[in-house]
Structures are given as structure tokens and as C-alpha cells.
Image 1 (tube, helix red, strand yellow):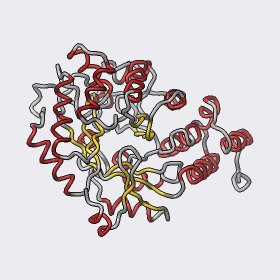
Image 2 (cartoon, protein in one colour):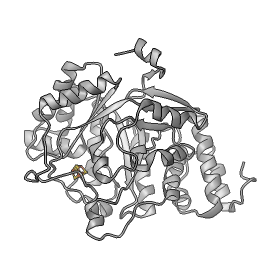
Image 3 (cartoon, helix red, strand yellow):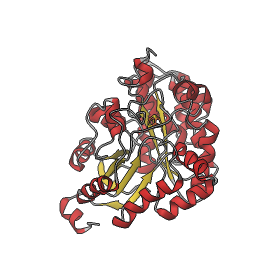
Image 4 (tube, rainbow, N blue to C red):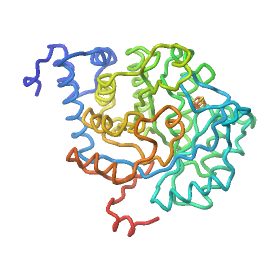
Length: 381
Ligand code: SF4
């Protein structure tokens, strides 16, 4: 398949190998740094593997973000959302505001509440249990994708319990899946520069492993394009790969390109404008070659890249378009190029234009829903 391209022999050798087996870290490092016309066969290989592994369906979820607070004790260097408690723009949503938001989303066909926010000072496990019960009692059929390893660690400390007990209690209260947040880049060198107050690499691994062990699957993310090296991008994907090989329950892998414009580190003069377009494409393609069917779902983040580039990324190995979102305020604060809310029609048009099949899914990729209006009504929750 490579004879149509002007490809270097090393690239051709690695890509040929990738058709049968996952590539090594060293090979991934090489591909992450290729330039020029070698990019075409890399993308073609990733796209070929995507089709072989998951076919031509492009999934997405009708969901809504419930960002319950922007008060955050962690204050990451890349985040334009978190505020101090005494900031005039700081907020904590009360129960009525949360239920109003949830009701509006369900009326609009949502299958998931993505419950995220800042890390509140002194929030204990009861606080998070309350958020879950509040939503589950009113909307028992909607899956809750919520919280971060940093929040769970802090809440467990405040409540004087261990992480396993914390997850068992959250699962009992209604937590269905854990977002892959707080992963950023899983190397302590970069974490010390962008999020020194967050869980360490090993803590993130341990906490997520415990969530999976108690029956809470979830996503894996990578946020790239800030202070990390290309090798650290590969190191991160390899950590996720090893966790999954060891029995992990990742449902999807989500690359999130760094949005620099309003981030504190950029405003302080760290001169990084984020990843380039070809770096974004290489990240998707190399992730597909490393993860293959071990984590079959690779998601593009239209909210970070905009609709046009998200569509292009779907031909670089990805097969999922994320969510309709309904108000991702973390991305809004970072300057989301196409806003933070997409209609089902918009996402379907992106997919159909690629001659692929749009399919709605749930958070766990275990249920799939027809997308025509009539069918949606017939299947209404
Ligand atoms: S990314 Fe999350 S933990 Fe970090 S400052 Fe923003 S809200 Fe807080």
C-alpha cells in the first residue's frame, strides 16, 4: 500500500509492521517526528487500521456538561477556568440550577451527564455522593460520567477513607464512568511545570486502576502541545496501553490539543502556541498504531479543534466525535474555536460528509441509538 507514496524505507518498514502488531515506543517516537511526504502513508495506515478495527461508524454521545463549580484549589498553569473562592466570577451551582441544566439536557435527548468542575476546598465524599444522588433520583436512566482522580483523592483524605472505599461509595450513589481528566501528560517532569498541585503520574495510575477494579470504567485523555516533548507524548500513550494490557477498563482514548490563548502559563510568557495541525494528526495516527484494538475508540475533540479540523482528524485513525456537550465551560474559558455546544445534526453532517455512518452511543459504548428524529422519539428515555 506504500508504493503510491514517496516514503522513507524506515517509515515503510514500521508502517508495514503496524498492520500486524502494535508498534514499539521507539517506533512511535520515530513516527511522532516524521515530516514531509511520510505523513501521508502514516495517516493512510491509521485510517486503514481504524476501518479494519471499528469499521465506518463514527460514534458520538448526546450529553451535557454540568460544571458544578469553577472554584479550584489546584490552579493548573494551562487552565483558564479555575478561580479562587473570593474571585468575583467564582460560583457553585445550587441543586436547583443543577437540576434545571439536567432537565434541559434530557429534554434534548441527552444520554449522559458529564459532571466536572474545580477541586473545592474541603469537599468530602458526601458532597460528591449528594451530586450523584441528586441527578440519579430525578434521571435514573442517564449515565453519569464524573469527577477527576484529584477530586477523589482530596475527598477521600477529607473523609478519612481510602480510595477504594471512596469509589465504592460513589458507584453506589450513581457514578457510572470516570472521565480521563487530570492525566494531562503522564510524566512528572511536565506535571511539575503545568500542574504541580495535581496527583502525580503514579497516583493517577493507581487511582484510575482502583476505579476500574471496583467496576467504574472510563476514558483516558492526553493533553499535549504545551511543555512536553514528543517522547513524553509517546510515553503517556504507552502508560495507557500498559494499564489496559494489565486489565484496565478504558472505554476510549481522547487526545486534547492544548488551547494556549487564555492559559495562565501562556499569559505569563511561556512561549508555546500549542501543537501544529500536523502534530495533531500524528498524535491521532500514532495513538491508533500503538493502541490498535486494545482501546478501539479514539475520540476527536471538536470543542478544542473546531469542527473542520475534527473532521480531518477522523481520517487519521479516530472513530468517535465526542459529545454534543451542552456547555463545556472549561473549554469555553480556553477559547473554544467553534463554541461549546453542537447539535446532533451538526455532528451527523460532519460524519456523513466523510461517507461514514453517524451513530449515537452511551458513555460505555454498550448501547447505540438511532439518529433519525422519528426513531429518537420511539426510543425516548
Ligand atoms: S484543570 Fe481542573 S484542577 Fe486544574 S485548575 Fe482547572 S479546574 Fe482546577
